[in-house]
Image 1 (cartoon, helix red, strand yellow):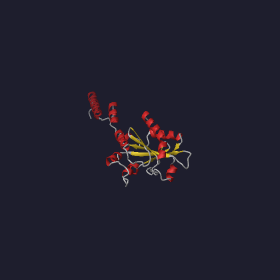
Image 2 (cartoon, rainbow, N blue to C red):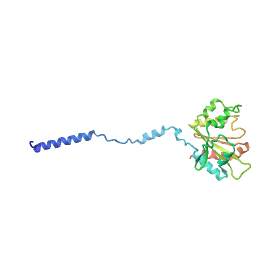
Image 3 (cartoon, helix red, strand yellow):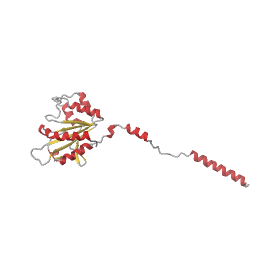
Image 4 (cartoon, rainbow, N blue to C red):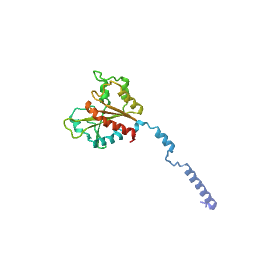
Length: 228
């Protein structure tokens, strides 16, 4: 084989260099897609507010049950298991939030659903009213009673109804405030709406309802003045 000589070697070197450069230019290097601040803001603003609701009692309720416990109103899961009161509360579904027992309520077990479908028709609610409550996402309840009592036991329940939006929660409260609804029979419940939530303070006897009024007033004030 004849020698390439200096010129031939130089030509081979130049061809190799050009080939490497072309190969490098054709190589695709994956680059991570980074969202700009503007894009991030647009995505955040498009998130459905339903997804932001906690599946459980919110901060207002959790803080409040902590406060009333310090005032002598305690939870009592054992009593609920032994006595047939507040039947809407699902004993088997009880869950601890911040070490406090909360009970889910299925809508079809709620006082509102039961009152509407009662065989003697003890409520003035209409089908269009019930359709509003059917939009509820979840209902959680907290049972509490007065500590240090054994025969005459004052107690009550806080219900937290979570709706898809503020407008639906406000509409639900307006419906409950209609005269002669017949709901929470023979008691004096208290209703409060704040943001996506409707709160119901109820008791099993009229005398207990009046006892709960100061608690309700305190809770309402806290939700209106603070944000969790």
